[in-house]
Length: 342
Image (cartoon, rainbow, N blue to C red; front, side, top):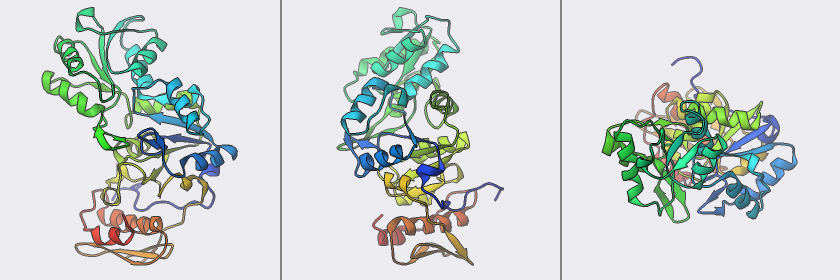
């Protein structure tokens, strides 16, 4: 196991909203789902903001403009300006602008978020592969995006036009469950052309760069619900992260996380910003957090004790990640997670 591999969630003696100057918050699955605020999100963010923490909203969803996102958050009771919203559309527009001439035409497969971001960078959105585009950009276009748009992208990409994607999230949370995301749409064009896009969104560096440029964060904390975008993006950017369990990541996925997907902190929801994080302690082969003790046996993870479910999950993470080292834990944690209701 190389130095620096995380083997347990960290503790914090002060509230996270005081330990970090800026929260870089994912939206879908963290602040809202299906357009409705997630439980405790509005109140928790209000307290963090009142205490001086800068709140920035960082989303891989390229469909909506920053103005639209800010208006939606404000309607939910979270006062937000467009300058507080950073999207993968902005990150991919900057990436494209660095590789094509000023004013170049860009074929857009997606929604208004992409078009506004491209114009911000001095580029010209177009709708057809026959408009002589210098690039193709693909971003989440919502459930009603016509199938013909994927064909339009394929025609241009097959001719050798450079192809960019805002992000490759395979799924997106909705009010009715988990729906196909932009990554699923990207796969359609990849299958048709055999090409590979340049990708800007989390967890890749262009998105982290865009976020730091726009927020000026000095001590940022990434807050997300996805291991393969939010937490890996924090890992790649060498910043701390808080995983909340209100979106796509469940206990089993977290226990099996390889090093790049292991968050600094774990909590049930955004109330975790307002508290210190309990420390996980080690006693021989046992790991303790709150009233729980976790151990890694030959073929399974064991959990004993009682208390708050997040504490039990933190102890289990320590047992699982220590056992796995630089790999992914394959021990059965089903029974232990069931005790926690996870």
